[in-house]
Amino acid sequence: ETGVTQTPRHLVMGMTNKKSLKCEQHLGHNAMYWYKQSAKKPLELMFVYSLEERVENNSVPSRFSPECPNSSHLFLHLHTLQPEDSALYLCASSQALTGGSAGANVLTFGAGSRLTVL
Amino acid sequence: DQQVKQNSPSLSVQEGRISILNCDYTNSMFDYFLWYKKYPAEGPTFLISISSIKDKNEDGRFTVFLNKSAKHLSLHIVPSQPGDSAVYFCAASDRGSQGNLIFGKGTKLSVKP
Image 1: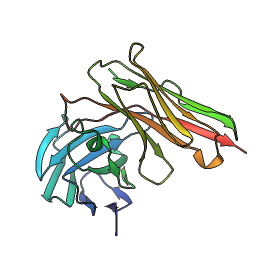
Image 2: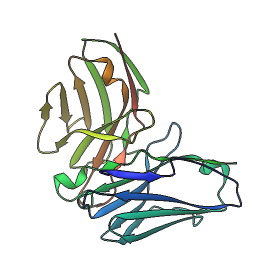
Image 3: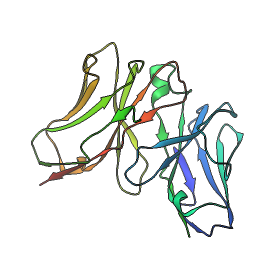
């Protein structure tokens, strides 16, 4: 496989469930990101990892917990979510952190995981 | 407050004509701008970019124009094709905030045959 792969593509969970979203990139990139896309809102950056270290946490509630075990894999662990957390969660990767060299600003996105919280 | 604004949620254009998508920004520290395209059930894909030291960048049918004094950029698609129908996102970055690419809300382009 090539590019950025996200699983599952669709997830329905209750507010008391615990689930995880998985992201895998086969591009040899050093930075990985979680974005949230809600209806009629811009893509919101949630977490950034560079070389497996978290470098950004945009005031995300603790019910979202990221994990980056290596430079190819990124997880988003979910627990006790709220219905307003229903959204499309997008994983992305880049050669290096965005804001550095021009090429580092090009993100490669996965297809997303559509989350519905009941 | 939104730093990157796409004020037109949607745009409809006839096939063969020009599509112009607009984007405004407020942060004068932004030094690199990108356009992404998103089809339904897919993630956004990179389309074209421009550095703040330039005012135009062209790639085939796609041209991005940057007006720094007005803090405005636009994407021109000529000629528009039905396959261009998608949501287009404007994004911006600055060297002082690495890892934080800021996106607009997107503009849905419909190109009618």
